Every structure is written in C-alpha cells, then in structure tokens.
Image 1: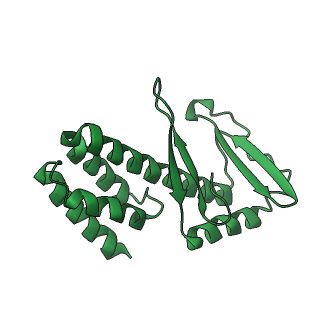
Image 2: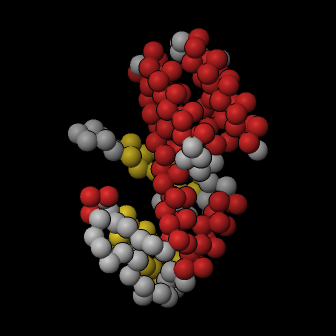
Length: 170
C-alpha cells in the first residue's frame, strides 16, 4: 500500500516461501497521478461495479482499495472496460513489477550472485516494455551492482548499460 505521502510497504510472497516486505517510496508526481485518476473515477462516491459483464476469472482477481479521510472503498474485478481504472491498474502493476525486481535483485546478490545477469536481463525487458513505474528508483541498486565484485563482470557491465538507459529516459 502507498500513503498520500508516497510512502508505504510492498508485500511479496512466492508459493511456499515466507513473505518479504520492503519499504516503498514513490514520487510525489506518481502519487498525484494516482490521486487524479481516483478523482476522475469519483471512486469513493461512485457505486459503479467495474467488473465486465463477462467473467474472466482465469485472469485472476484485482482488488483496489482507497482510504481517505471521510471514506473508504474497495473494488474487486477480474476484467474491466473502464479505461481510467485500467490506467490505475497499470500504474499499480508497474509499481509491483518494479518492487518485485528490487526484492529479487537484492536477494540474489546476497544468496546467489551468479544469477544476477539473468535478473538484469528480466529487468531490461521490463524497462523497455515500460513495465517499471519509476525506473530511477532502481538507479541506486544498479549503481551498487555496477561496483560489486561478488557479481559476475557481465552483470556489472549490464548494470552500467541499464543506468545509461534509465538516464536517457529522464
């Protein structure tokens, strides 16, 4: 969850593994974008059922919850045609992708540094597909990998290329 100050916690759990929790911080610009989409939806006051008339339960379930002074609302659906809500879902999905990659890169550096190149290849695909909410959030971690003698040289060089890609996008 993310508070209106842009700070929160990201919880992540793989099957049969213990839950990992990471402190999460998003930029004021992203918080503002999220808030304006909630406002555009009139999310708290609306009673719209966002679920498309046809059930796509094979896609999994999406739950979005907004808590503000004066109200709280939760909406659950597996598919919607509401474009504003889909933009909101994309932002949250990109935050989740970003934070998952951060957690996985940190864990692999500690436990299995030889697998760092594979994680960086996944990150590059996600960056190029614009599936990372705020690529600059990854810069400090990539800076650390770039100089980490415990990871393979190919990973250190790849981290450097990814930093250049992120800086070019700013």
